[in-house]
Image 1 (cartoon, rainbow, N blue to C red):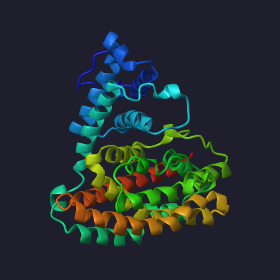
Image 2: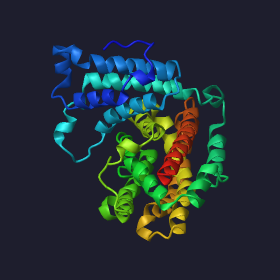
Image 3: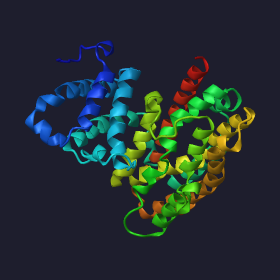
Length: 353
């Protein structure tokens, strides 16, 4: 099958292309297989190249195309985390072919996403004031249409859909943070480790935040297996998750990651308050809202720690690059808002079916 820029979205079966990619992931010694028979990846590579070009260079508005690219990228990124599954699933963890696929998607996608942030202006901001102003705004934000929908209108069916989609990240939350705390010890590293330990329940499974998420899923008879609802996750939610991998896996992006994590910790209490209020309005038990509740309480503290004990000290250490913390914050705000809107759209759809 030969593909060109004249092929339309309707003519390309991205689901089949993804299935082909999933098959490649399971091939023993994939790189050697490609060396011996390069035609085994020709179809996938042709579709991948066309999708990257159309999505990020031509800016084609195709949800199917964006979903394909983000699902492929996620499948590679998640190999950086251990899922206590079949060890053979990681046989190609260090594959040069997979590295090339990830780089091809990620570099083009990040360039495309960067257009949403005015980095030229951010290079000249007073970083400390910019972060303090943003933190104050997002700690107690004005109600958004999306937030009000979750809080006041979402039904039980919608709440189930919310849990299903967010379980992709909720069952392994804070895992990206674990990727950045290794290395030289200092006060910033110590605080990041402290936050990670709280997210992980101080080493006690019963107190780990993902355990509270599992309890919510169990309360509704939903599947608590990680990635059980991967197929219904919108591409904008996957992009949010993949972005976390991008900024945590490359040490040059460390300051952007800190800005991203700062936004998460600052904004979560207000966002999760809407979910908690929805659960209370619908008469659900504490087990059905416990994950939101524990985050509201702990992230109020984590947000202040991230601002005062992590972000601000890094300004002094990296004066010429400190603006990248604001870049990371603003980009995460954009990506999270977009993802939340996509979840709301999916929730509305679930309530109508």
